Length: 345
Image 1: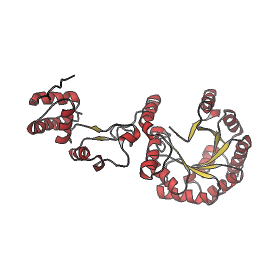
Image 2 (image 1 turned 90 degrees about the vertical axis):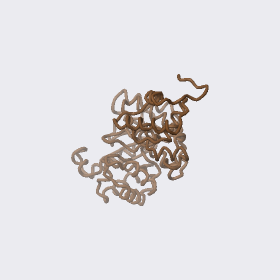
Image 3 (image 1 turned 180 degrees about the vertical axis):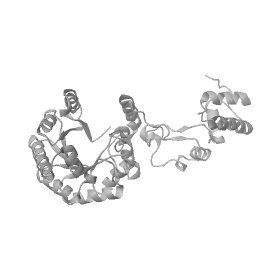
Image 4 (image 1 turned 45 degrees about the horizontal axis):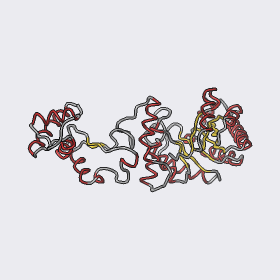
């Protein structure tokens, strides 16, 4: 699809994960990255897996330094510099993440960034590890870090407050060159910035040619949904079942006249490999009912459409979705005739 980097896994985690990362690196032309803590064996495993990029990370917020890494600020700087130097010496591209950057003392964050930049880091990834950033504050942090490094900046947003995609876009606006995303937003806790949301926001709202084949986004989402056994919510932006569906009579009538009336216009279902759907329920209007009746071979009069619509609304009010089966039943009960030459399947 033209994705720029695939972060394939954590090679040191297990033999199976090492092999998976190695196999992915060997079978794609896309840049593949492997994760590593600022620990010698982690860096060695990542390098040995054959990835082009090694992504090393160390906690920089005081709470994580003390209670997760069980280290001091000085030790974190020393270990980070050592890990970056090892990656650079291997010839791989080096990305460094000051984990929990958005809860890190700014002066210390800058100190770490300067140290790993001097050691040769190609990328600085800024993670909102606990999802506490807001777009304005995140953008300010990106701008600040860019003043202290010649490395390219990447951002990593979590969705604990539903701000991940907004923070990723704010990062781009502030000068970040890349955002880490995951298909369907899968990630720790509430997840990460969603691949499909960030790509389509960049493409449709900012007019950026990402190089990603957006017409396969829905296909990719379904593939990951099945493989991960994590259902995509119906109201999920871009790829949810309801993303391009219309039930409200006002919305449906407008879309039937001109899709731009109640769809973004800059993003169509065709752009992401999806289809538009008119859902029948308690909010349905006569325009949708007539359209669906025509689609299944009926030729209703205006009074018949109104009567079928009344039945659809009553059925939908009981929190039931009206399927083609119910619609055909209502049409027969009302006495709607079929169009000439059309038979029921």
